[in-house]
Image (cartoon, rainbow, N blue to C red):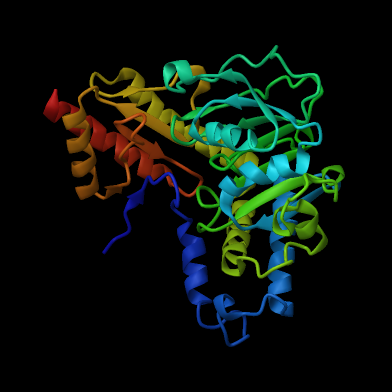
Length: 360
């Protein structure tokens, strides 16, 4: 069977070149006579894999020397607790709630101290990013938290909030490595890798060194302390070895493609094809305020639930997979991460035009 165009929000499509390379190494990784899946994480071969992965990620994002890269388990959702456990010294934090994942992080933080919702876009089903130029930042806040790209709702912070000197923490799960970032503007940047970087099962956290201390909330488990993992080079316990290996291959693929400036231009070109069609379509409508549109996740609707369901079914039959929207938005959602080729977006738009002509 031919490969489909996979528009899944995550776990998501991976670059074909990476999958083929991994397949070739499945039974024998570089003469070791075994798969990376079977390899000891204490072996020299795996140490080289994790070291190269970190070095390539640092190069791609130009990560400053005073930031540590941690390959962690528990997914992005575990960071909802790990962040307040490690950072909430004053037991106060400010949250900007622009979607379901930021809302979950905000709810979790309330277990550890006073979490303040200082801005939100809940009033319009998270279809826009609120003005964050002059927020009511709490004087004693330990940090300000955002989810930078909202996978479900298709919004993206185009400008970082004015935190008035407070530490910024950002969940970048669904825009990780889609464009350059200035890591020095954040205290912690983290993201689940299953959308834009690798297979499911890991989160990468980039943490400023001065935030990695033993001064954590009482009762914080050893495994949920950043210092535990930083001191052990992400190998306090057995890490997700195969996922690190796959992410490392994606980092090399990104470098070979020309780096993050090239990926940003590529992603802008892909998104423009789809958004331009949505803006002129008589049937399909985007659900996001244009200035806040994500390059990665594009939700759209026809306004008719039965028609939406038929579109998803017929698109699947045409080799366009995983286009059903999230239940809170309805309709459709096309996730067009780095690994989605421009041909996939062109095929989607061609199918949408055909469907519109046949059903309007």
